[in-house]
Length: 124
Image (tube, rainbow, N blue to C red):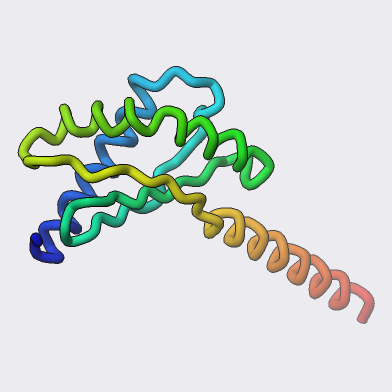
């Protein structure tokens, strides 16, 4: 078992390396525009939960998650080579992060409210 700060450092390193991997190594067109939003590593270093999102939002979620599951072994091996100071590398699990979509929706709602407020002021 490792300390919480060490697992956080490993998670940050996985996030950086995975971002580079998506930019340089992975050529699957289904994974274009995928962003790694967060990584959590358990204290036993058995699992790395990798949260992803995409600019296209949930409309491509199924396609992206299927591609990530298919590439999980390759991704894990590439990360293990990049982060070689670990005795064993955690198993990677991909999760969809809905937060960016929610933020976008909230921005739309606020813009609509501002527009309605502006129209109300013009009527007076």
